[in-house]
Image (cartoon, rainbow, N blue to C red; front, top):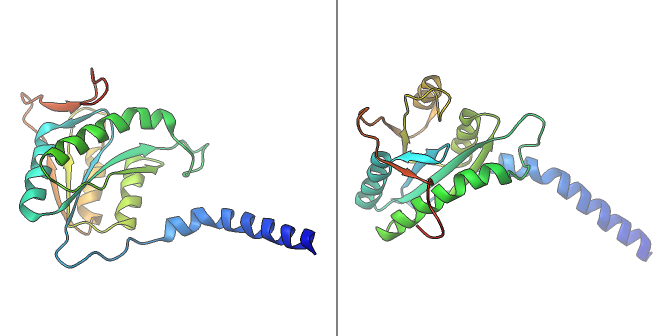
Amino acid sequence: MTTVLAAAGLLLGILIGLAAPYARRRRRAPPRATGASQILLPFTGTTLSRRALEAAIRLAKVEQATLMPAFLATVPLTLSLESPLPRQCTIGMPLLEAIEQRATAEGIPIDSRVQAGRSYRHALARLLEAENFDRVIISATDKPRTGLSGPDLLWLLEHANAEVLILRPAPQDTRTISTAGLNGHF
């Protein structure tokens, strides 16, 4: 009898483990309290426009909103979307922490994310499906193959169920938040 119960428990554990990725994928964010705002600040690499961060912080302060910086990570087709991404995280986590520290110093509530996808657009789509946002502030770039492309930004404008603010600083404005040269706490 003990062996049968142990086997049944093991089988149930395996089935729950197999179903977990699907359950996570279908889960919707819980409804937020009325008046609570969330501002999404997605980024893809080791730098972020300082103007985009400043705009997100100013807006979060005025609206008493939660800032949600989100590192968008790409996952190769050879791996599962739920696979750990240590190399990707070594790229994005220092910048995510720098954003968190800057916003926390300003008294802004933070709710950070790392979102995986097959492409940056896919990762952003998965995040928009799972969460509700009032605003999306994104930094555009003119550098090819860096960050979200023009078609990705157009897709965001068409599919986001939120206000979208796309900032591209003037070409001479090179001020960025970067992980280059950061050691320890920033």
